[in-house]
Amino acid sequence: MSDRERNKRKALLLSRIQQQRLDLSAGKREWLEVTGSYDRGWHTIMSLRSYALIASSVMAIWSVRHPSFLMRWARRGFGAWSAWRLIRNTVQQQTHH
Image 1 (cartoon, rainbow, N blue to C red):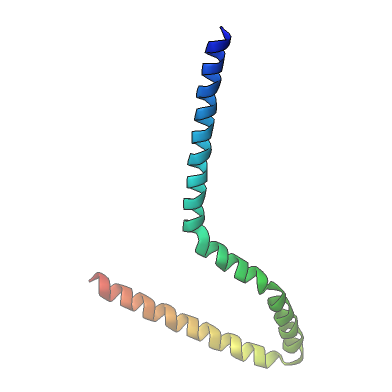
Image 2: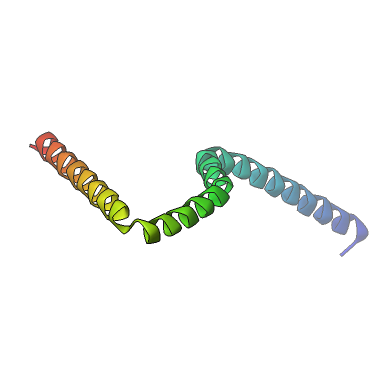
């Protein structure tokens, strides 16, 4: 293979590499646009993690000192969640018929 052919092949390969880099960069931009809302949500959750740790510690201490309070709110929360599921399922059944 002559130097001229080698240089021509090298230029072709470098051109392909450059195009692949541009394609990857465009794909990265599209990917970041699509997943941006998930990333922001995840960062929000991670930034609130220390507050959640403090709140759970306070709740653990409070529940040991006042167990009936925790049970009452747990029942209310479960009741609200059950009511929400019942309403949601009823609405879904109504829209499918």
